[in-house]
Length: 158
Image (cartoon, rainbow, N blue to C red; front, side, top):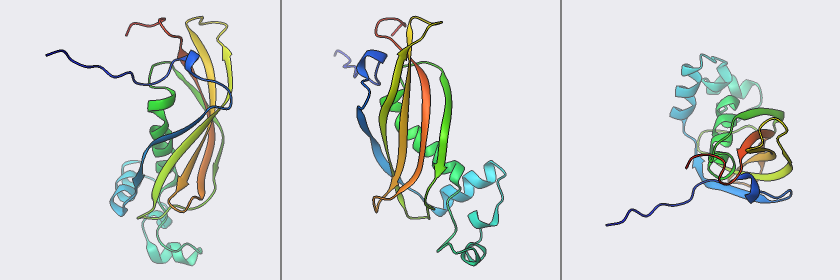
């Protein structure tokens, strides 16, 4: 029986400025996600762990650790944007817009905002995306821009 392969990710030539992506299928966040991430990263701000403390600062519940929100949102975008290969070049203009609470579902969307050929690595182009994390109510909770070297079609071993 032949193995059927599926193309994953996009090459530099597949992107166009203004192109939009709705990533992944979303992820509902739990108290356990928040506790595990917060403890593993030793980020012990009480608003991530203590509901009564968080309420004193105007939050309705413990807040999901924003660093987890960033990593999750970026991770949901990888399959469409950077999975084909190429080094990560950084993040700019990171904004945490609204708090995320246990039980919220997070979705991610991106738009291509810039692209150019790499001067030093001709087998790659540089693509910049603006990515947004959006909750189940349609409210943005995080936005950032990120850049990657993205391989050109046929330039890297498959």
